[in-house]
Image (tube, rainbow, N blue to C red; front, top):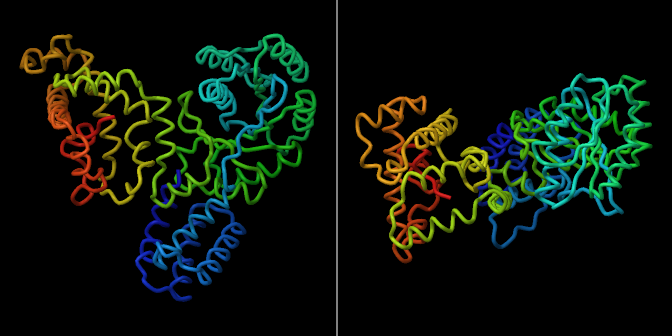
Length: 466
């Protein structure tokens, strides 16, 4: 998300950040390019006008910080205003009431509402340690109830049964009673997708809302619909007292206009971003972190939070102890490292959060190819015997042929995996001595500090370690 806007803004602001002196002219020139970048990102025109006017006024009259040059001050002003535009801080779910707290989820057809309900249930369970129940009041879409039941079972949260022959209001009342009896913390209600022009269905959801009496009413909308998403949120807000918005399919939206416009136009905060189709693909929306990523400054806080949640700390500690004792780094260790990377959503997801990665020269398609290579590596290592994983030197002609056949790859792929493993093994040996890890990391200076900003030798598959 925001790739196009980020590229344009970073290019524009890079030119002005090097300016030792600012004039009204070069500020105006830069703001003209920023304005075009925002419009191309499908940000609403009134929002663009207001944003440019505010930034320009602050830049012209800015008191320059002693730690920043005038050009850098403009970048800071743009960043601050992006944060204000999107809501200043994360608006958390307000669940401070006697349980069960009810969350009603509404939205358009095809926006990914049911999947979002399951993602939210999983987020509340894993991140907030809540006992959650879900129920479907969607009696119109075939298999909607079955879909939610399947998703609920996959994440081990309670599911309240309902039927297409039931009335939505009755489903809600039954679910509230079931949630109370089961002593759950949060009840999430999925509703039928509807268009705001369908007056009969809008009256129905108002009745459902009245029966549910939710503490949160979330509107789910597809971010790729751009300004239509903003207009839909406005229309629904007239029928329901929305408390927040969930933008889905954000990984497929390179523009990000909806995210930059919704708060300003509707007055409703974005609370979550849906990313990908995996059940853990839901992120709390932090305007400051998003603004930082748009301007190429990374998002280290989100990376740390993901590490806390997804990194297998026991495995990581065992590997550290193993290296410190001078024991060999084998193919099973390498496979674990690749799997850890996949837990983070792959290289692209991680790089998006690392400061300065916008300056790294990565050939088009390289990241996708690298992810494919990494997944092949896992399959290849899984096709090896325990002896081969511990002693890779025994893997020669006949064994390579068997491993390739077992993993559905080629002998060339096996050779490539072994070469990348050897590079990682050498790196780990260097890290084994006292104090060498810090020296090595300083010498690498991160990927962004590599000569020419190039990828490490052997591609991304051979240049990472969690």
